[in-house]
Length: 153
Image 1 (tube, helix red, strand yellow):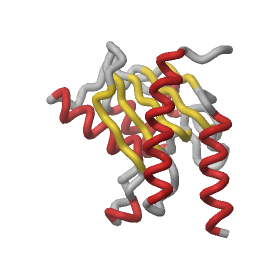
Image 2: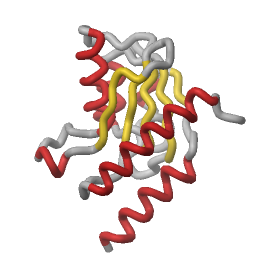
Image 3: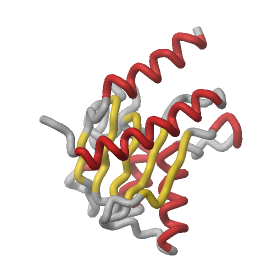
Image 4: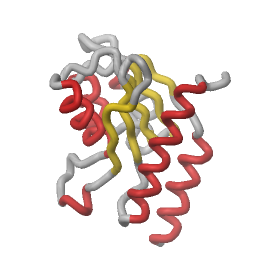
């Protein structure tokens, strides 16, 4: 399936943030939140090492900025675009924020919670779910992660 051009544009923005994270010595994950019109209202990149904050994942930081921009925790109608499939914490956070759509690049078979290891985001037992589109610019996102971890070995 050909990805939506708007999702690709947003993924390029997330990838730019992932490159910034890598340059700062962080795991290269970047995220953006787009409002229903497609405008970016939140940006984030991993900052756990910099802030010593275990919750400073790209997705959480992007959602915080988007919520501040809107003046509301409720991100209904918004799309979260992230370079790596969210972990359980981030999947739970996006559901708590009522994010409507999740678009991600690389699948994470070790910690992913949007379809690979777990599927928290679409769990029918929960009162809120999000549409999930995975694999957008996956090769680019995976290559960035691979280069980062190979350099650390």
